[in-house]
Length: 398
Image 1 (cartoon, rainbow, N blue to C red):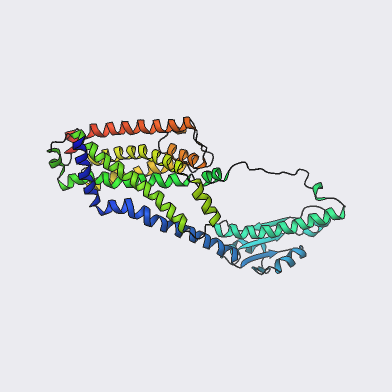
Image 2: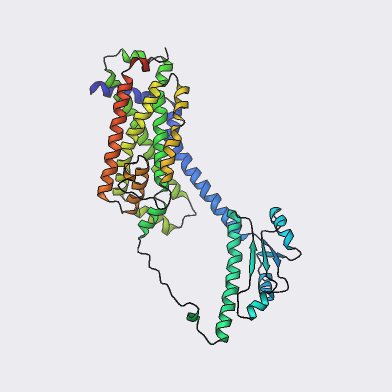
């Protein structure tokens, strides 16, 4: 054990000298991540505000009908109306962005309304995030007009609004704020943790095995009094620690980004801080440890097999997709932690994190997640040790 600690300290010094490792472990999660999140949130909110505030270009074909709605539309200061268009021109005008949305009223719209029937209106637009906001603005205006027509009809018949609304639905959402945030935000957070765990472990794993082969220092290490088991355990502990530290720093980076995002209302920020209890944070970190062990063993095995730093990078590139896909599946609505998903690596961490934040994690499923992660971690570590004991693997570059 003493020799393993000596190897551990030696490898720690080596990775601290590597700028790429420091950048991946500290700079990106602590500085770049908050900057990116603030930038994305800021741009999204700014674009949404611009879409709400911009002057909407509305193409209008009334076919001699809907005079009241036309008058209502003309009073809107945030909209301009074009009535010099024909049905055949609508697609071309929208493609050229000369018109954002086009409204076409049926020729018998007024007659249908007078006959106490439904008048037809066609709405033309191109789906995009910006036009989605524009569509909501127009639909809101149409709904207001529709509700007024319904109210006039009911008034003429001396009927109450309840005549139309035969069933009144009163909704009661029994989920707590913690559960809501856990559902909507909890899926995104483990995605970040998993990615940074993998990235934080990847560069130390490459440097401590394939890098040593390039530097021709692996032979010196093998000639030391330490056994191969002690050497591989020392390297393995460093890679695992790097992954855990990177994930922990990413948590701090997310906290800083939320704290510095001015667009988040203070009451929501306070609620976010309140629900992330120390118990939840400790449970999250306890899930990250076996996952980092799994990543460290797999990445170190690949690095030991590789002839050079570049070859190790190329071999690990496909691993990104293997890691990202299960983490992304955890974002899909309806995917829950159960007896089956608790056995799927990475996905189980994503789903368990969501339930931990929501405060609805079941002890039995959590234990199943731990057992599956520790089993795979132990299996991968065993394989890594066996791999390191093979001369044909270590001296593959010779």
